[in-house]
Image (cartoon, rainbow, N blue to C red; front, side, top):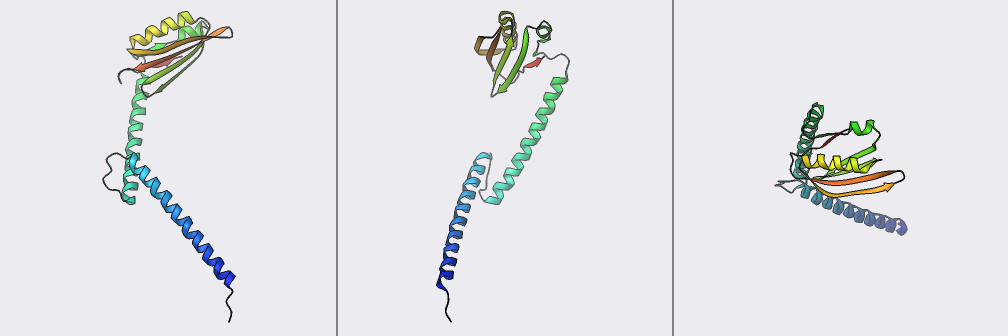
Length: 167
């Protein structure tokens, strides 16, 4: 009985390709496990099961911390008189300010304001930021059409400085 060698060679080639693909998959998984283990603080064991277990526990702790911070921030937002509140409603009523954007990232606050009379707004805002013990890193006023864009970057010196805009 004759055995077709082309079928046998094809099978060996497919097996070899499968082995190579599987090896690459394992290498990729190992790199991902190494990356995951580097992000988990206090990791004691480096076997894959321990890494996954500790990663799950760490994510659950972070979720709990996040919920607690959100609840605390919600409580602070709900207070009628916050010591670090800047009230801009009087500017909106007189149409001095048409748009305000504020972002917070890694201890810095970026404030962008689109307004018609930048001198009044900038002076008032810089005074309010100083009252909050924020350090002004950069302030720019750029004319845009018939109004101006004000951009202010301020640095938070401690966790006690917390800024809330009421529009």
